[in-house]
Image (cartoon, rainbow, N blue to C red; front, side, top):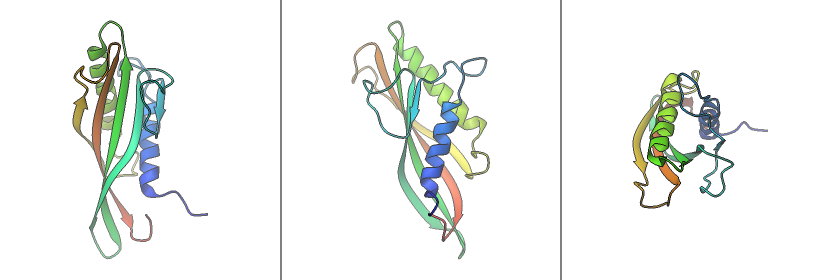
Length: 148
């Protein structure tokens, strides 16, 4: 049986990295739901919830034997807080970025992880106590031509 595609391995590694976040001196929250499928706020097991979704991928030839890929991974963050959902969202987004920067090569699996644009619902899409944010992460990695 063939191994999983590299993009699936990367998405799973990012999910595992976010699932390992634990509230304490470095992180504000322990996530209650982390997965590789997009879920709505009414589908998650608890808050904060993180969805890790593989997006567009752009290859470029490095050598005759290797390819460099640039994969965009979309991270969706859901929070719920009756008192200050914006503060909770900002903290949850910070937790995600910290977790990515702590291990920005996923233990050697990729060349780099670079958190890019962050978007929030700006209170327009969801009513209190729900808030929503997204981070696009640029993932760069090399692989042999036969290993996709």
